[in-house]
Length: 446
Image (cartoon, rainbow, N blue to C red; front, top):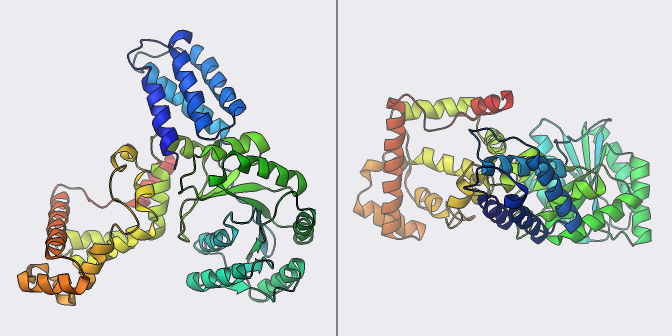
């Protein structure tokens, strides 16, 4: 996400290094490069000029403290302007009514169906009782896909035969939600073009009938600047409360995130950063500005970890480490927890300074696959007592896992190093495993 933009902005700001103060002359090149970087990232050129003009005005009117370099000050100014450009502060989802209703709209292929499931999981974790509703009667696969996702996530899905009108399906779904005590209804609708009068009238009628708490426009970030134009056309005809950006994990240039609020004055409320149901984040303009500038987003990292770890699990694992009882079974459990946090590379990029270090690292979806397979090929005794694994056992494990003896040796060596590090950290008076609950409270207080 935003890799090229991040690199280009860092390069532009570095050009101020060595200057004792900010002047109109020495920032001219920097501003030009920033403007060019934004346009390359698919930000509209008028918006890019507006941002750089604002940065220039503030930069020239700011006194530099002796402890702050021009580059550091300029980074802050760019961060502040990017935050303003994307909406200043996070705008939450407003849920009201019994049940509350979220209506999804957008072009075909934007990812509405998978988003409906992601929203269902998101609110299920927040102790809501969601019901997913299949109102895309034009694409038979949409209903089947939603049912499959609902079954996978253990979230009920309401559907009817495709010949039924969407507003009738939605009306029956609301009654079903009330009968089953569902307090949130998420409605997936068909993709449509803003120029398709019949389809736009259909969803407008659906919105008028349901009076949803939130109408969200779902847009594919990979579409680029056209996504902003489409959103504007939809808003003029339908009127929506917020935007959800999908496919930000692809090769999108990211400009749509920077332009959306400025053009249509509607907030981005969620971003989808992967295909897994848990790959959904609230959109925070200030945090996104930090990411774009390569400053990380620790709070979002902690929030993701909070969904996987709780204080009791952290305490139990810490006790195991303290008693030197951490074994391969525990390592397997930790690997599975980390995988649930989402894309490994994207997750690590949330940590300050990590975006450069992970560029060439093989942290793809199957990064931990070999580790899991090797450990799963061991007997329960071998997982808890790794010291008994001799060459003969290693050869059997390698054969059973479809890996090599070298890979088995490498895993055992890495496990030994992890165990020693954990043991050393306990003796040193600190825990190698972060207390995510404590971290989250700390960041929220600052």
